[in-house]
Length: 426
Image 1 (cartoon, rainbow, N blue to C red):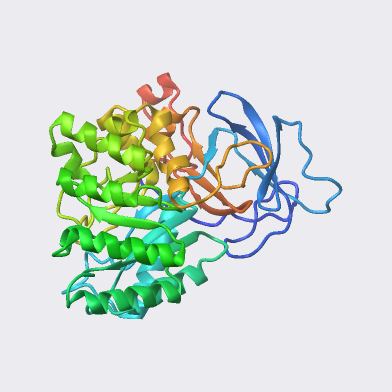
Image 2 (cartoon, rainbow, N blue to C red):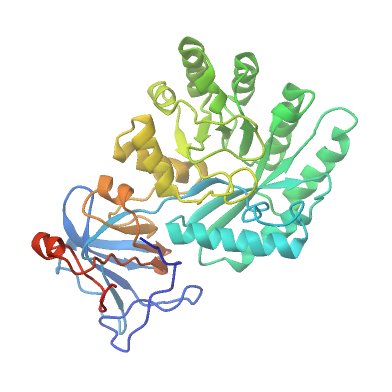
């Protein structure tokens, strides 16, 4: 069944039934979400205003707002309303480059176009906040980061995009330039220090350099590692312990290849150090060679906060990557034994925590960062998450609609299968 590209909701001349205007255009009117189903089974109306949830009440019980002239209304009958997901591990500089001829272009205009398109695609899936890892130094210099930061500015009001500066080498003679460029990247606007210690001749020295720069700037750390070396990972956990605002590691697929006892010891150390793990159930990314998914249940049992990201979005590492948080949750539920609620937590609450964002609940007072998915309960939504409506800062910013049709047949008529189209299927 084909799925359309995300489209802005259509407008109507009747203010009592219209949806907000096109994404990117501020809409000061309050927004009323009508007839949404919650995961606890209730059907409610939700009133939004000022970028937050103003009220949640039984269906039909809420007025659009106190004595305000205009308002928007969105009918969510048949939809499940959830806290919006977030994307904790994207690669904005290489996204959508799998079909390019020759090496990936790092020309700033090309990177900005791809990063913008990728962010909009992930917004259409529901992610209202993204963390994009961007390579700095080597042939890229700071050009790719400059382009991603321009994309961030152009996307303001649609999706929150933060950039992670990812240098290749930070130790020895070759690392001198890397350290200088990394410091420049932080001054330019990168808000997270990243990198891949596995690729440096001195992984421990690399981590020390990253932690020092993060401490200088008071920013988080987000490192790529396969996590296949227990001794190295233990040292990293010991070094990272207590650093605020926090350390994230991913994709850590190598943990799944260790003996269970060894992996459990590492998980305990990561939990004690307060390190978060971001797994990539949809596939890896170009910064690490190991494939597979971190042992999510083992990590969670040890008390490690685990989030799930998308990784590669149609680049050479995964030419069919979708960048869909709900697919990541689906895979964790179907392949790794997580309950649907826990699987969704990895792409919503835990992913938002990685990004340093406030918690979202469908309750009054919480940020209006929401995703409505066609379905009546979470398992069904993860299984068939075709139609989606995305709310960011209290505005509908993306809508994806899918129509299911069946041709005329005795079976279709007898079973009462839905026919939503107007024409006849040949």
